Amino acid sequence: MSVNLEIPKAFLKEDEDSTNQRILDSARSLYIEYGLRRTTMEDVAKRAGMGRATLYRRFSEKDQLFKAVIFRELQRHLVIIENAIQETSSALDALLEAFVQFGGLVNGNEVLQRLLKTEPDHVLPYLTTDFEVIMSFSRQYLTNQIVRAQKIGHIREGDANMMSEMLLRLTQSLMLSPRGVIDPSNEESLREFTEGYLRPLLSA
Image (cartoon, rainbow, N blue to C red):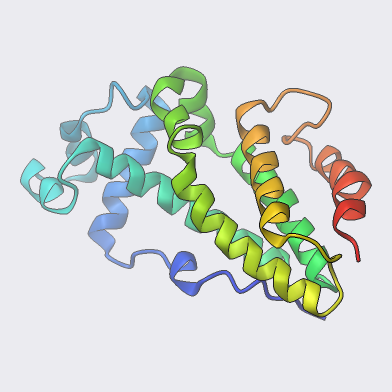
């Protein structure tokens, strides 16, 4: 039995513009090689094989380009998660599998981990002070999924907003402090935590 968490299709579909994709590919590879601070818009244009004017018509500033790269990383993670949860047997199983998949994907993301280690001052605001923007949307999405699961008896009764925020803050913590008893780089460790602690908390 497949379970669909109904991840919005707009978030699963990448921009099909080949020029934009070339720009994002170039920026991503440069971030990994040289870091964000040392990568200039001119570097990106050169690697993408285009003039700076073409690049600036599509991305007017460095911060906008960086956000576009990170958003595409998220899109690609969501596609993997969507595929992974198709064979789960309940809404609770799907939610827990999504948690495991996302934790592992973020921890293994080459560009994000590179920047967190070498330039945390630029990346951390997106995961801390500016995290409320992501938190607000994600909480609403997760809350809707939990309410649906509660109605069919897959998740226990309780404050769906509180449950969704708990999952989001756990995810945030694993991103910011990956070293500990729970190792997000180890799927077995993530599953042990999920099955031993999250499932009992959420089970009907």
